[in-house]
Structures are given as C-alpha cells and as structure tokens.
Image 1 (cartoon, helix red, strand yellow):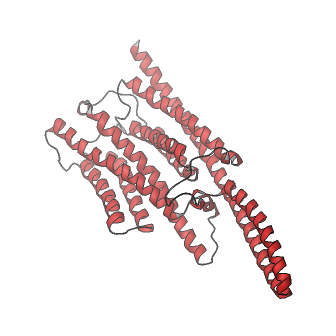
Image 2 (spheres, one colour; image 1 turned 120 degrees about the horizontal axis):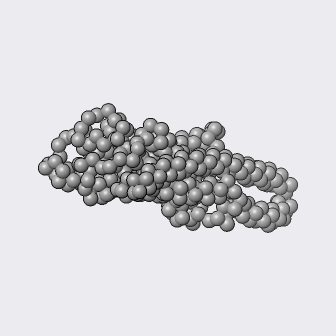
Image 3 (spheres, helix red, strand yellow; image 1 turned 60 degrees about the vertical axis):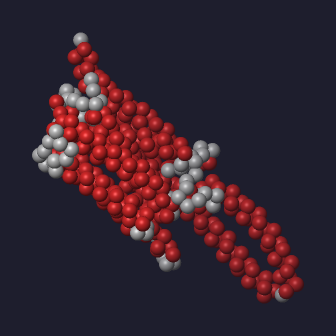
Length: 371
C-alpha cells in the first residue's frame, strides 16, 4: 500500500513540475512584456521632458531679444508656468521612474515594491502573481518528490536542479517584498525555466533510495546550503549581465550616442546593480564557505579523510577561490565596474561547470548524478 502511494506521489511530482515549468514560461513572457511597455513609457517621458526643455530654451532666447523690461515680466510668467510644468512632470516621473532615479535612496538601494505605483504596470502585476502560483506548484512538486522517496529531495542531479530552481524563485520573491527587483524578473524566470527544463528533460531520474554514502544527516546540511548558495549566485549572475549591458549603454549615452537597448531604461544604474549584487554575493560566499567546510567534515566521516583531491572537491574549491578573489579584489583592490561583473560571471560559470560537466563526465567518489 505504501509503495503504491509513493509511486502515485512520484507521478504527481513530475506532473506538477511540468505545470510549474509551463507557468514559469508565462511568467517570463509577462515580465518581458512589462519591460518592453515600461521602457517605452519611460522613453516617451524622456522625449516629452526634452521637448519641453527645448521649447523653454527657445522661448528664453526670444524673451532676451525682446528687451530687458519685457524679459523681466516674461521670466516671472515663465517661472510660474515652469513650476507647474515641473510639478506635472515630477508627478509623472514618480509613476515610472526606476530605482536608480529615486533621489531619496542611497547608492545601491532599491525602492520597496509598491503595488499602488505598479498599478500602471499590469503586466508586472500579472507576472509577480503568476510567479507566486508557479512557486507554489514548484514547492508541491519538490515536497511530494521527497515524500515519495522518503528522504530529502536533493540526492541526484534531477532533484538538485529542481530544488535549486525552487530556491532561486523563492529568494527572488522574498527579496521582491523589500526591494523592487522587477527589472531582473525576465532573467530570473528565464533561468528558473531553463533549470526546470534541464531537470525534466536531461537529468530526469526516477524515485530511488539513497546510496549508502549519502545516508547521513550531512546530506541535509551540506547539500541544502549548497543549493541556497547556488540560488543566490544565479540571481547575482543575472544582475552582473544586466550591469554589463547597462554600463555599455551609459557609456554610449555619455558620448552623446544613442543606444539600441531601450529596455535598460527600466533598469537601475550599473553602480546600483553592482552594489546590490555584491551584497548578495557576500551572503552566497558565506554559504559556499560553509558548504566546503561541511563537505570536508562529511568526507572524514564517510571515507576517513577530510580532503582527497577528488574532482568534485577540487571544483568546489575552485568556485570558492573565484568568489573569494571577487570579494578581495572589489574590497581591497578597487575592482569595480565591469571587472567585478566579469569575476562574478566567471564564478557562476564555475558553479555550472561543477554541477554539469564534473557530475556527468568525471568519475569520482561524488558520482551521484543518478544518470
């Protein structure tokens, strides 16, 4: 009877995982639609401000040519009219400004997500709502997988990838309560969707019992922290990519050139992105440090040594080294801007290599892919 229930839960887990993936796909489309429409609105707003500024300058030149007395009177009227115009402009800008344009926040700070202000962005509201639904479906799929297997659901690549995707979505939604990160929604939902596609198509593994080496409470401690660190690194990877794109756009605009990446109007400045990504990477680095230390303790209990230069152990240390270099270079060597973004991206590429290539192609004591 218990076996039949486990099989049923395993099947339900796979169906709900597919349903969550399809919902994340709709979330991705909604976020992209919101970015496109919001960027267009910001562009029109910028054009309107520029047009008013040009007209004001032209009127000022005409008034100066008309004479000192007329100019004095006209300037008083223009000042009153300009105040009204600026008031209307500020009211409109308050609706559509990005976090980087909020003068009340310090560098690196984001506004809290305000749904009253977001009411003019229906696509964003739909995207966030659907992401909450997708996350709930995702949680049910992961939990039912664990109940069906009668253990924690991260013992092979399928489970690690699907649980990691759930952590990415969860961290993003929690952060969204305190900070307005809707601008990174397309990349986060897209990465979650890719991870679920890899899990369900490439790494699909039936429910199975644990291997003897994994039957330890350290599986819960070591792997859960590794999943959390990977989830944080996924979000900072998305922010690093946006930072590089935004820095390139800012450089072109500063040179008086136009930029084709109009969607970046809805994204904070590159400095703001860099500062917030650094904070998240600091948390992820602490988690990965604990992962490395816990893995060494588990290895001592399982195989009687803390370190054996196994391929998985080496690449876990490589990931730690790259992010340690990122932290050190940015804090003590002044590696800001694009260099810090590239270091963050390099660290995430090492995480991906460690999870995919090392787990599937390199034999070793950590060959638990389940494939």
